Length: 69
Image (cartoon, rainbow, N blue to C red; front, side, top):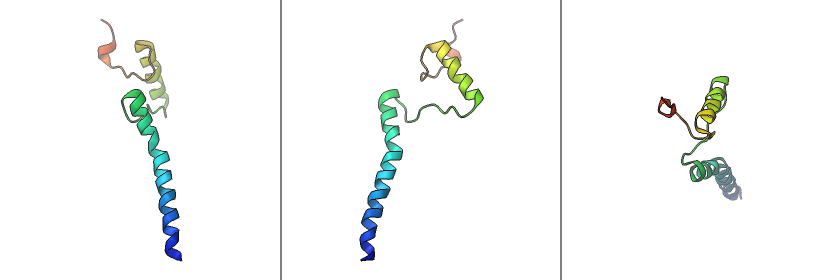
């Protein structure tokens, strides 16, 4: 019957939702936060290079407190 198609739709949506959100779980386990850095622009790419130069780690964000006097 037509209502039997709902089961496959729910299962498909559950797998798609899981695939979209599993990266947040692995990022939290690896980095301690849900999302990695967004590098969608030139300025953000330069900030990533600055953080790597100051801290030696691409994913450790640094602010003014990380600059030595």
